[in-house]
Image (cartoon, rainbow, N blue to C red; front, side, top):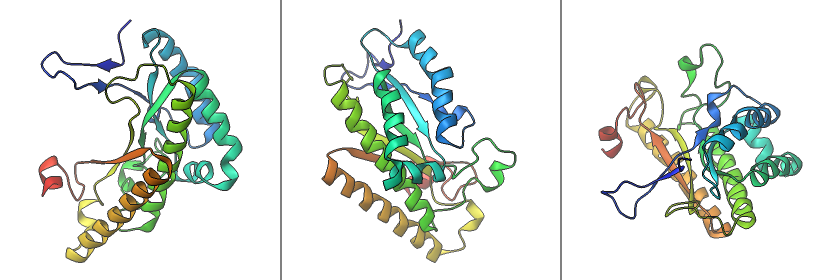
Length: 221
């Protein structure tokens, strides 16, 4: 069977981990997410994962579901999600926190950047997902300490988000500063989680067409 942990012969010591991303399937609640994982992710894991290897999955939760799972009332549903992941040797090392909700609804593209990084709701959504990521990473690491994870493995989790806002929503320097301040708030929250739990979470910005930063050059600038 092919491995989900690839290494190029010209780049010794570096690996690329592959994951099957759950955002391919419409699910705006936890029940739908779990049903999709059982119907699609687990059969794929049986077909593609090498013996003794955990199967990478990328998870998506709407802001509403993320808020529930990360909060004090989310203990039971979070335990159900954790059990499904641990029992089937899944490795949720990457998360999508870009669309706020309704990932597959008609007309999503028109408002996919809302709320933007001008809004505190974007920070809160991102940190809710980070709390879930930390909890799942700790659980999977504890359950499978002897399973080979490759050079990167679950040493950190990643969360993808957009680069700020839809391009025309940025009206000047004040808006750019406001976005930067909210990114800083999110990063401070991620750093606090790492100090408290020992799990690093990396915020990965998607350079989307028509976004305030639409390519890697504009992100670097």
